[in-house]
Length: 407
Image (tube, rainbow, N blue to C red; front, side):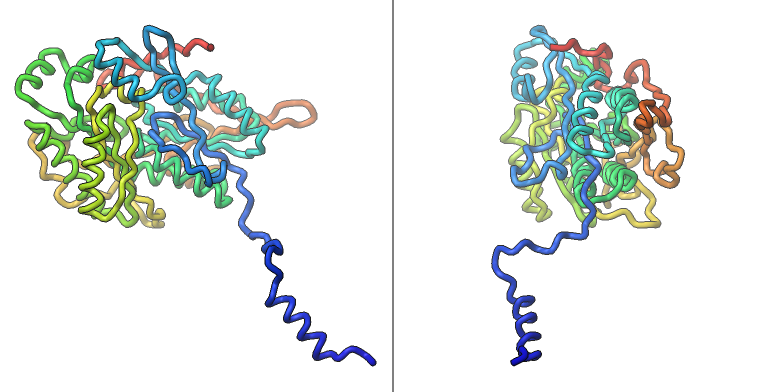
């Protein structure tokens, strides 16, 4: 007898609805990631979750701490706690940006790993030549690269790099990934509370007389980042009052964000950082990430420094005006404070932006890696423009410009 057609249809339906357990799921239609995000160690990123895929976290290129023992890679050869101990012991330390060769090695490794594009997100070019070193290096890379000058530092940079990596893991192209990094960076705020004016004096931010007077008066300066430059935000007389002010600034900014994320940093002051994070979480409902301040940043800020970063991970609206995220009460600072909230801005780095279109306005520059055609190299080479030295108005002006010696 011929097979019952109804029974045949029911068999097919049964196979469809009762898929055997363990059968491979239907492949996702999401585009495979081809963009890898790179950042630097001043992003103060926490240890990545071991369950997260390699494409979902930024690759970190370390800056250097120059010590009497030699030039050490932060986070690799020297930790933030070790920097705090050395500074307390009176040891003279300085810092150095990565050499272009560091980025070139990174680019080659990512090329071999299958990356088609690199989005490299770095600390403000007013504080370091790191983004310029990346730009020089990626001109020689076989992978197209987009260098983003975040105009900020610490987890304000870190949140931007993480957001970019998440976009890359979703399969977005390099222009969209770079735009995402620039948007988050511009809408991030960071405040530093230093424990002593001595380290700012050593960095050239204040004079010896001002440091001595401030110490005698017990002044605790709160610093921030404005247009990529470190500037004073407020001066508070006592440590307790300064710490309270720091939390007030963070809470006000959190309330102004659609999707806030928070980080608390410290250099040799873990208990204070945890206490601040606890209060912020209780008052806002947002649990901060607590990480040590970058060793390089710690050299210039000194032991006992604590910092708070607030970023907004909300998607960029089409009619947005970047940086217009001033919280209520932001003008309630003393007369010596800056007049506006420090909306971190991604600055356009010199590069070949032909064909980028609107993405150029997002604060990125595109570098086209050389293509190999019939044994010849073709493609547009961007002209790099790197400052000869860091502006002296920055507390990080002691950065060593010479490339660190190779091991």
